[in-house]
Image 1 (cartoon, rainbow, N blue to C red):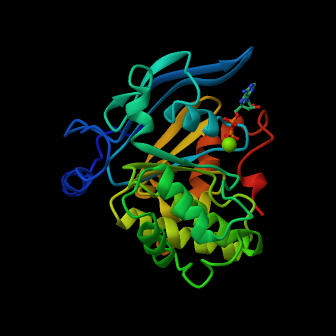
Image 2 (cartoon, rainbow, N blue to C red):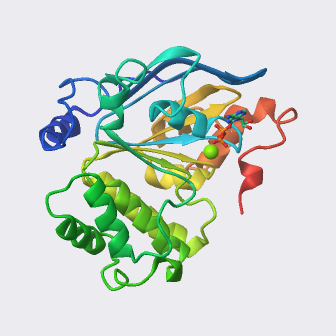
Length: 291
Ligand SMILES: Nc1ncnc2c1ncn2[C@@H]1O[C@H](COP(=O)(O)OP(=O)(O)O)[C@@H](O)[C@H]1O
Ligand SMILES: [Mg+2]
């Protein structure tokens, strides 16, 4: 297991400066954007989380990778204060989710697997609506800025019901950025999208990452985590069984008898190596869910 101290002081310092503009109480200057310790959660007899620990550095993209039903949404909902953990300590943007839920909610935005946009309104109207709700000084300017940033300017006046899946998801992510929350949760942002739309959303997340926002994304897709994340945690049977950069995860593979110098192991190979001993008892592996 990797240590949890692979943070990036260079980026953190920069982002702290940026965040002072955000309309939330000033977070502690130091420390990770998200810190989860000993998280336990059951639904009745079903033990979903059995002691989950991880940290997300400020300004980084962190992927929580796990099969369908692994508990990814449960973790996101606890982080977003929508659900209470049975045991464990969780801070987001320096605020405790249990004792400072309002401050946490002021620090985050959650984009779910099912787009929250209103189909009857235009893309621009959706953005203006949320900008009003979040008490932005100039909702129209906020909307136009985001349409431009997400390459939706031409489509901005059209009803969302006419948008493609990728455009809808991009609009959903754009809406989540209103008010400049320092931490964004993207829960399976590309599930249900066709390959082309998935690439559109990937490009969007890449741009987000460059802007200093901390992104926690969940995914069942190994290549998505590999492509987008600075750091990847594999959630399996209620625990994080591997956590590291792609380079660190690659080192988890047992050394090959024959070395193929030109081919780096893929995340899929690492994933299968670390969960492999459980595969007989766990039919719903992520690899099996791939298109
Ligand atoms: N409110 C709930 N009541 C009972 N069981 C739940 C509830 N929410 C989630 N679960 C169960 O907890 C497990 C983890 O669910 P979830 O966090 O949604 O997984 P994931 O997002 O990784 O697919 C699943 O077995 C799911 O059926
Ligand atoms: Mg889920």
